[in-house]
Length: 203
Ligand code: NI
Image (cartoon, rainbow, N blue to C red; front, side, top):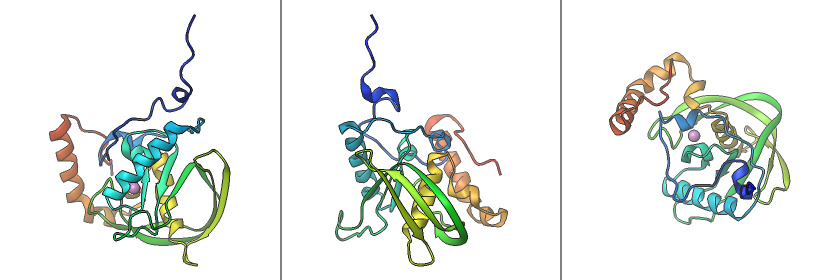
């Protein structure tokens, strides 16, 4: 008789340990992530490891695909403080979705998978985000970027990662021109390290 798979294997497989950040043009950044269905100690452990990576890289957000895991999980700490790790507002967002988007706003964004690169991206100004917490409880929050919710920018950027979308996909040709040289360097580094082309931007 076949043994049933362990519970945690039914969505993302086991969460890796250790984890490390993947950078452009790693193909993991282009995968659509799968919903999380099991809320257990392995999920908590994985989120703790994600916080360690985000803190080490001095980020305000990190999505599971950025550590090579195709699961609908991201973490944020939009009030992260260099001098006092853990003193900000660390949050875990699982199976998130945005509803009732209104208006537009822009912010100069960067991404841990694109070190040293920044550009203005258009985003929704107001919306409601629904998600599950690490225990699986349903949560929601209304965010208004122009009223001061910087978190609204962070969650839209991270939510994109769960659909294989990157901040560079939002840029105009003129904006991309400014980043082109650095993108090419990263593509060359990836080829040198892996012997593969990965998933370079086709624009
Ligand atoms: Ni990012």
